[in-house]
Length: 111
Image (cartoon, rainbow, N blue to C red; front, side, top):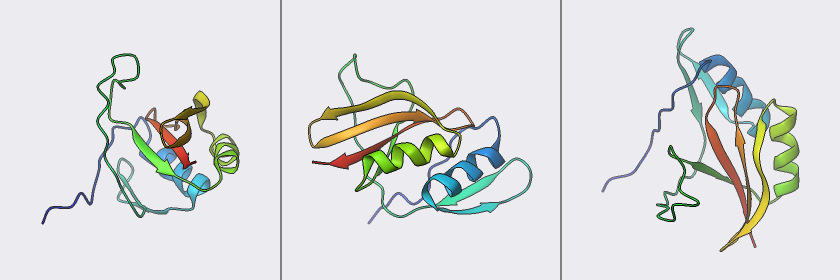
């Protein structure tokens, strides 16, 4: 059996990236020196987007929530930059954001 248990992203500030996810979602952060930080969170699903109009230029990690509005406010309060306001897609609604280290992610809520 194979399971994905780790994903590594580039960051312009590993500490700022870790601090953001801790503040926005309460995830456990472990700094391993000034240039590397681990963030521990439960659950991961992968999707593959073929539509050229929607395909991200880099992997897009999507965080699931039960309250999209509260998640949006938490992202903003933690210093995230919204790159796409909430919108409907098959299966729910989501928004996209960029964390302080420069990575774009999404938060979604099922219908």
